[in-house]
Length: 347
Image (cartoon, rainbow, N blue to C red; front, side, top):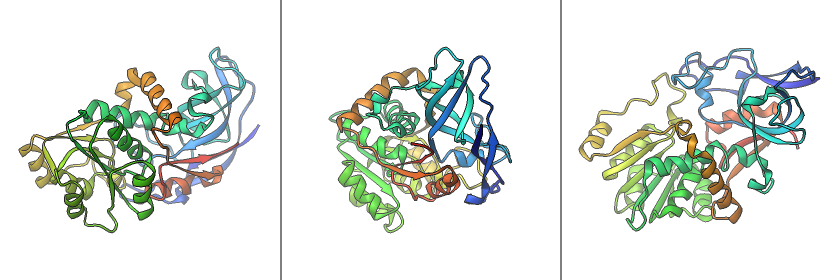
């Protein structure tokens, strides 16, 4: 069976900016004669995510991430439908998802890496399994609950950077629903600012490309910042931390502004930022959702209920065609997406 796949054509270099030409569309052959335990899947949607930039390097900088290999098919989050199976947990017609789905139109995978999902959880919007009701949503809700510690009635202020992205857009809504009095999002365009406030219920939003982040935060957060959900790092995060109250909490989720740089993860802080954290007793803890998967089922049910009831709104940018995987990834890295960036491979 002939399929199309996306391979890593070249690496951008340790301090390089990825370009679509780092990826290449190839033809390949998939053998439909399955061995015991194998499953033939047709790909419906593929995810592109910031952490993938680390996988483009020979050394990912993170012990839990393996590098992509040049001239080999890349992988990530995916959802599709079972076309044939020799695995007891998968049947023809099942909708399945995986964190290690190859960027191919069809693939033969071990059934052990696939998770069967119920389309009713997302009202048939299967791409949501890659975002709001998938690993991204889990990162947002468990990150807020395990590290943010919102207290109802405490009049807390939450700031979210990368707030119009896949994770930040959910984290801000979780903070609002859990009881934050003020939720302020930081993003990169006026369109995104409007979406955060008008569609997602954020109290306010600022455009870091236009506004002085420190000055605008002082205006929007007159009582300081209690919780900071950090998706970007760098100068934006320094500015937020400078506005934080004593005993505040930084949820270290991502550092997208630093992923093109040859620095360790998490990247080092400035001396001034470290001094503020120490002087004000602000906790800054890295959050890894894979360490909390024992809570995943209950959290996914809660996310599903929130999405289906309309309490949690989903922002999504969908590109069509496997040939556009590289362009979609690079656009996402530059902030071209609103909400979760996915690529539709087949209807």
